[in-house]
Length: 202
Image 1 (cartoon, rainbow, N blue to C red):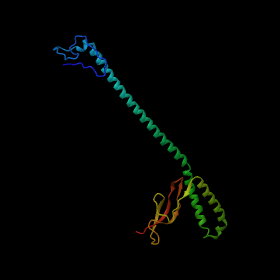
Image 2: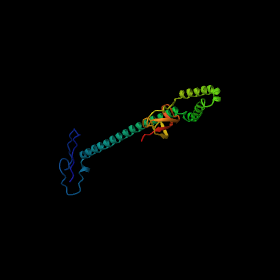
Image 3: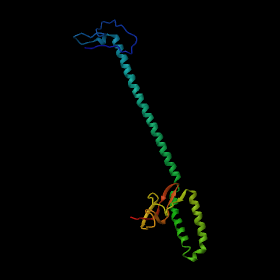
């Protein structure tokens, strides 16, 4: 049994003048129904329905493509931000390797200056050493290098490396009592932690 129904979207009512029993009524033919072949108004309604389905499919396709384009644009923006950040960090810490090579030289100057009071012969050279050491410190500071304050500060695993411990009841727990090797930061980032002795009461 086949029944042809007009769509509500068709505002203009059509009158079927053909001899098709399917327009508004059910087909009572016991043989194979060929109403669609003989009724032009039914064909027109079917064509409209088919066009509407195609429009809906195309609309969904366009919406999906628009969503993919927006997603691709968002990914591109995030990629550019990541690359900009990487380039910025590369430029910001471009001198890191050179500075790390200079720090042992700074350590040696400090050891030499500490020998001033122990070796009288060194006194005549100390002034020149101090000038070179001071100039080296000023140069490193211009590039963003800063010494990490450690002595008598609380131990911080992000800034310090504990190599020895002590038990001093006159000092608080986790307080640094001695600095073996100074630590440094480059523009706020630790490039070498301080090697220290930490007070442990427990």
